[in-house]
Length: 294
Image (cartoon, rainbow, N blue to C red; front, side):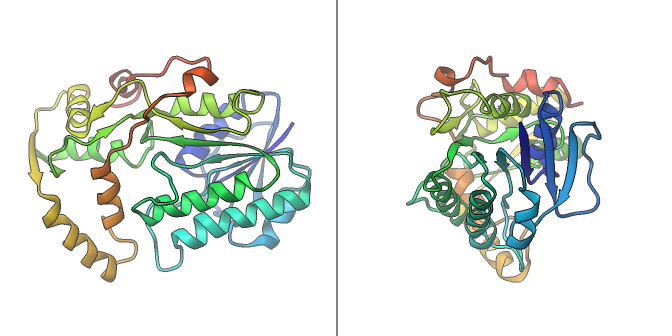
């Protein structure tokens, strides 16, 4: 089977490429930057493609059977917006896939996505999902909670802060809930979607095995690092105006109002349907962190 992966140089993309490289499939990693850190193996090739450039997508998807679509942004820049990259970019990919006879799209969305979501991030993810669902192609849509592992930009940023600072700032009361998903578990499920008929045509919410308050997550990271740190709770009402001001001045802003809204809203599954679809034991947060965090 010939498989293409968009966003191959990102955190999930690099790990997915590594997992796919251990299969008998031929992998085409679609990249738009020169400097990449991906495995070099006989069943992996690289192709230059830009999700915003339909002319580059057509040759990049030639002779491809399945596309993993991972391209996305979490913060807007002066050049890249949620609408352009997430919504329009996915539409471009669907169009190029149809023209090339691609049979299946596996799309990495996000938990919390809905048509009436409170953030542009989740609203445009919904638009992207709709493009995939209405494409006429076989599809699987995956909505993970916060993803952690070597090289992630979420929990690892807090780990670095815990290593350096005696005080750890927490927005709000820290009681909002999350279900961290270990990257090895996620990539296992993503690879399994290639042949898993139970996953076909589904939009699957993916949470880890534990529902944890954010402050509990911080405590687990401290425990793994063997650091004693003080929590400093900062009212969200103080942070939001500052974030809004920074968004107007700096692109990309270090913290956005969308990010704060998503954080405070929490990120958990109502029912983890994935256990009915995938044969998997999900990795608890502390166990996963102990594999790589020191």
